[in-house]
Amino acid sequence: MSAIYNFCAGPAMLPQAVMQKAQQELIDWNGLGVSVMEISHRSKEFIALTQHAEKTLRALMEIPENYHVLFMHGGGRGQFTNVVNNFLGDNGKALYLVNGQWSTAAVKEAVKLVGDDNIDQMNIVENCDGVNQVVLPDLNAIDKDYRYVHFCANETVDGIEIFESLESPWPVVVDLSSTIMSRQIDVSKYGLIYAGAQKNIGPSGLSIVIVRDDMLKLPSLPQSSIMDYSVAQANDSMFNTPPTFAWYLAAEVFDWLTAQGGVTEIEKINKQKADLLYQCIDSNPFYKNGVKAENRSRMNVTFQLTDNSLDSEFLKQAEQAGLVALKGHRIVGGMRASIYNAMPLSGVQALVNFMETFAKQHSA
Ligand SMILES: *Cc1c(COP(=O)(O)O)cnc(C)c1O
Image 1 (cartoon, rainbow, N blue to C red):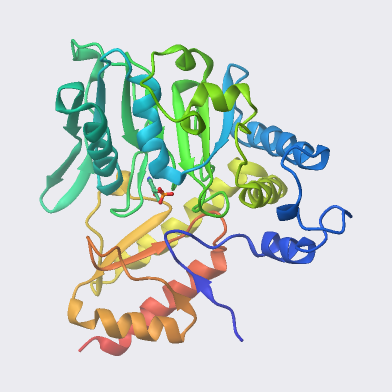
Image 2 (cartoon, rainbow, N blue to C red):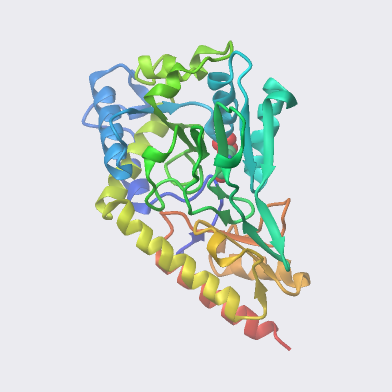
């Protein structure tokens, strides 16, 4: 079988080297004669794995000492709930910035839990002559007391990414699910960072939370112990049985990324990949993208065929060429190429070649 390039938005492709290593180790991990899935999470071997995972992640993201790293259940959406329950006790209020589908879903969950009165929302995407752009508000000009401000740095469905860091008088909580470790970010600017694993980290189910020490002192709402950040922190993310296999694979992905030269190096490749694809879209009237250059996602490249009656033919032929999962999200339509860390430059090159050939064949 010739190479398949998988552009799925999530669960997304994982580095091939990681998959091969996992395959080799599947039934005999670390010379134990059993799988990593079949051992106690409290065994010394597994604890060594978790310590290594945390150390590697800390180095990759340059996480300061006063931040805790938690490995939790519940993916990205699990944190929509946890952030509210952990920080909005005693009638606390929060501000949610909205720039696409995921930040909208986060607000919805927050409102469901604490009501409209405690959640303010602000749309930060403006459409200017058919082009969407993010306009960050001046938060320091707002005379209100929030426990935190929440935003989504990369809107996976809409293909809108915010590269600037947000200046805020309140702690910033950010959903990095689809952009974590794809570029350098200054962790010290955030009160809490979270990410579901299935885009740039590992298998679904796991989520990574990076939380500043003082945030754990905020009053919480009554909540399940397994979703409590303080409980997770006090128990080394092992209050109950964690998703051990996902944790193991995440550790392997961190090692792989370290071997690639870390976040600095992968960021260069990610830029190259995104530039190549957007250049193809912009230079060919056959394709279009409606996001302003500064806010175009480097991880999820959305695009439309100018003649959308060719959509299904495009998808069919792409699949025949080994380029799979290019269909856009059902809400926005069109196409989406998710090009996370694990997607090699050769995959994007193959896509661009295909797009150019397809356009030639179907131009009058
Ligand atoms: C995928 C995604 C989520 C949801 O993750 P689940 O693990 O499915 O809950 C949340 N936010 C963003 C930005 C995402 O890309």
